[in-house]
Length: 374
Image 1 (cartoon, rainbow, N blue to C red):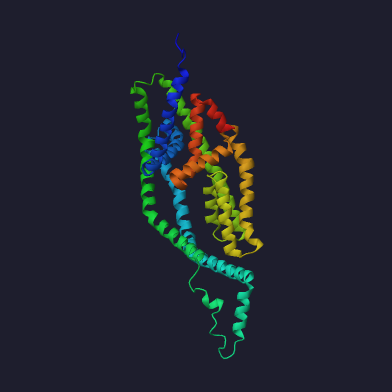
Image 2: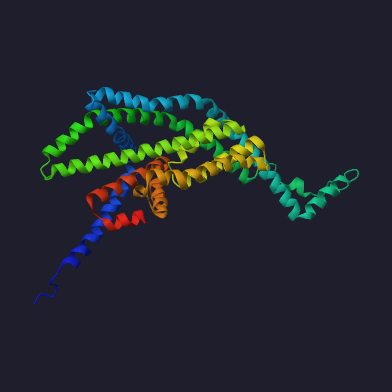
């Protein structure tokens, strides 16, 4: 008699360590190969978004090369316009950062001095006694004020150092950003022009693909749904940024276009992006109005507009098919933020939607799909 007639549990136990090792290997590759994978992932998402339009134009007898160049140019044009319009206010805020840092350190120093005087009344009394000393009779006694070091405290030095490091890091990364943008444009054009023929050759000649029609339908469905999602979310976020910029402009907030663009970009990051946007607009309000209640007008306007968008517009337009569990989204954002930084955070939700669509179309790992949608 065999002691283990069914060896399925043994096979499952053997495969569990292999799956964990595979997951760790994928994370290791994503982390250390980000400079290579990041442009590929970004351009792939853009190509997926534009591919249905290129296909429609091709059916209208427009060559893929011409349609690809036209669509990429149309996509680049508004970003180029915004970059030219926002260059001056961005430079102004870049120059304003050291001044804000200095102002903040002065406020912290004054607050620290006030707290020290309140907590140590004997020091205040010592300073008062010094003002009533005659002929230097009390000069030999070391006062607390003279014993204090003239150098700035550690908090001040840290804040100034952080501001300078931020500016230096931004200047240092500018050439790399420009190179990645050029690489992304070239890859997007090549994916739109030569991607379909390469995919068709892969389907036609790869021996392990038996049901070629099912694979074509699967890829076409994922491409269509993901393109619809990206375009819809982009239009919604652009509308939020435009409404934020117009509202702040009519209120009288300086650099309203800059804050509107930031609001639209940050809205690609669910939950976390709204908090970052409110913090930035609070800082802008404090700079323009000072420490008073009117400084809360910019973040208040942004909060109301973001509330309407997130609670009414987006659920109504996208429907329940694109619903994602908030906790899963936040954890997913943390993982991709750790892997690829700020760009990873922006790409996290589109990638999660792509995975969700693939699981739904393939009808596999349905339990994970239910958890994502819970």
